[in-house]
Every structure is written in C-alpha cells, then in structure tokens.
Image 1: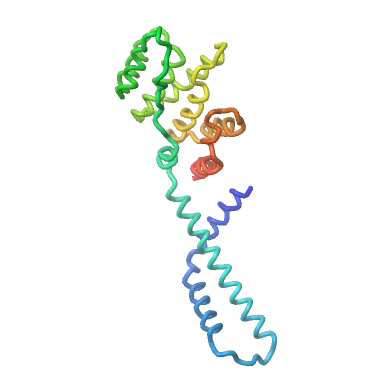
Image 2: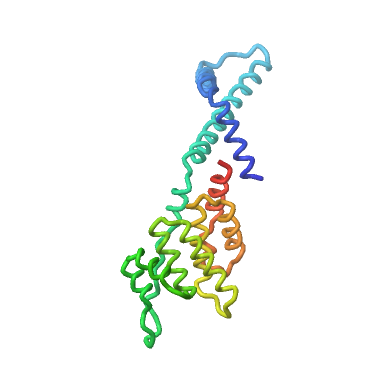
Length: 221
C-alpha cells in the first residue's frame, strides 16, 4: 500500500509540476517578508495568514522535490539496470572429487568458452542438473535469455524428482534475473518472493525489498 501511495504521489507531482515556478515565487516572497523589519500587526489574522502561506510554500516545495526525485527514478529505471546491478558471474567451485575427471562442459565454462558450453549441452543425449545449470549461466553470459530460462527451469524439474537437490537455490536466483532481463516480471516476482520468504535460501540476502520494489515498478510501467 505504501508503494502504491508513493506511485500516486509521483503521478500527482508530475501532473502539477507546472506549479513549480509559482511555488518558488511564493517562497521567495515569504522569505522577503520574514527578513523585512518587524512591524506591528494591526490584527492577529494577518499574522496567521502569513504563517499559513509560509507553511504551504514549504510543503509544496517538499512535495515537488520528493515527487521529482521519485519520478526521475521511475522513468530512468530499466530491466537492464536492475539486471546489471544484481547479476554476478557464477564461479565454479575449485574443489572436486580427485577420483573424477572434470566434465567437458565444466572445463569450457572455466575457460570462458560459453558457446562451447551451450553446444555440449545441446549435443548431449542426456544431461545432469549441473550440466543444465552450466548451460543456463553460460546462456546468460551470451545474453540469451530464452536459453537460460529453459535450462534453469529444467534444473528445477530434475531436482523435483531427485533425492538430493543440485544447484537448486542457484538456479532459482539466476532464473529470476533471467526473467527480469526478459521482462517477464510476474515470473521474476514469484520466484523472488519465494526466496525472500525462505531464510535458509542461500540467496535470501540478495533479494532485498529494494530489488522487489524495482521489479514491481518495472511491471507497472
């Protein structure tokens, strides 16, 4: 409700932005009167009117200032900005079972050969959750939102059927960012709310109220 009220305030501030010069003139006039030599008032009503005018000018100035700031943030906000501020390249763990050879997709990802990661994924007959995840983060590096969304979604589907979840939290977080980049804000918000409500989620702290508010603003635009 508070965010909705703030949006309404922004709209009204923009609508009445043409009053800015008038308010500024009123404020200047009031400051001149306040700094003028003190004169005896003939009636108490005159003093009351002066106070009311001063309070009104200050209140109007504050509304214009806050409304202008909110309007600037609203109209300059973009999916690219929100995505860029929250995306961080995924780093593969350097520790692994010494008895197992590193998969080709992992080697390609460490080398930054993201196209090869995707190619290996597409060429495989069967894929593990980790291979699907690596395809997803590689696709994000390649700015391929559709591919990333499909791969992360597949990770979550595989984990539903597996006794142990593999890279599930990571997939949810990166999937939410892929949805933001793809302007699928409803899907992004659904995942973000789930992460925010789960204190055990490893990306819980990454989903801030500010981030959720920004995605909501993008959805309203």
